Length: 275
Image (tube, rainbow, N blue to C red; front, side):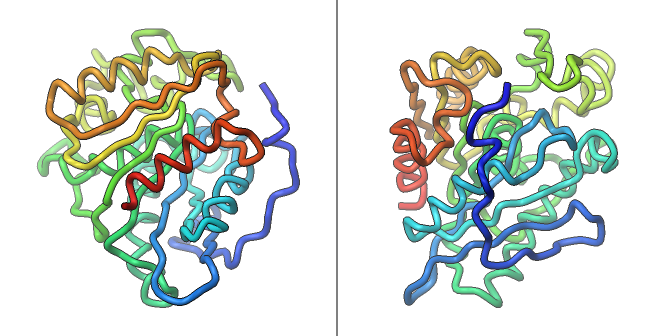
């Protein structure tokens, strides 16, 4: 499914910065004008974790948040396909890019006490995973363990694949190559690689211990609303502080389009998390 937001001219960033040596290890930084240090949203795009989709379409969201006074770090990372992503490279890149915020703040007016993660679709999974990262145990079979350099104040998922086990059980196939996308990302089913699901899925790492906002449209025919809804039920049962924003009549892309009213729910969620 292609929508207008995916084909518009990408708004320019202030600067593109590499956080690693691979061609996909970079991010677009946008910093609001004005005095003082600004809150920062780490922005993570979707596209089934595949290399066919890049950060461009989510640049409109990043530019809109920057216009509202919020700095944005719209990250690229290695993805399934020609860039050599998947397990564990995609996760290692997202962690490294988030840790690079510490270096960004040394050169730009960023308030490290107000950093959140915002992601759409597969990026919604990665945003919540960043919030859960500190809960990954150390030990054999845990290549993703590591203390984050910058603690997150909160995380926001927009139509996210926030529970990989539920997504796999539902037989979620991506819209690019019609494959079982979660199994491609992690290299198998929960029975084949249970240790990977345990440290890669936010649903497995609950409670996250940070505030969360989950936004999902009721007419989303790409990522089932039930994935978000079941995650919210589990998270609340385990004591997490989170809000579910259900947008009646919205499809998969409506909430990330700054020209549509549904985007107001995302803006409100970001402001709620930043404080």
